Image (cartoon, rainbow, N blue to C red; front, side, top):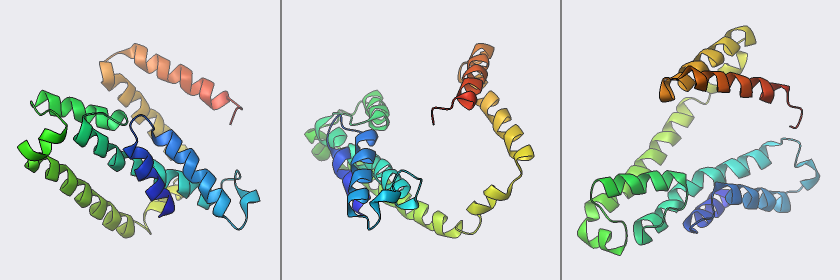
Length: 176
């Protein structure tokens, strides 16, 4: 809950983004932890803190978008483009001129959170089963979807080549 609140507050700040929210919530989780020396080893508290704040930034970034017309991150910049294409100018006048759009955003976010919560609970037993899929099946599937996705962006084999080159470089890297 703490990390989600941090993420929402950071998301409201124009220009601050998911990276800042993740760092702040991770630091806060480490500071409040009974065992801060275990942070940095992949413990679930640190991972959950950064991811919860990362996810909360998107909802918070709608505040400056809808009230001031300032996108807070890339997702709200895409929404800004969509609003402008449809002739809607984000800002204070959007609330009075087109409250159906504003409340549509709010209700869709609420519905999305409820649906994701229900799906998360329903899949609680199923999702970990992905870890049991053998690598000899999982790796080829990942490669096929990666190649298809890279090609689909611009219908270019150059994109596929770049994806494969950087994939090999990334898999050989010992930086992480």
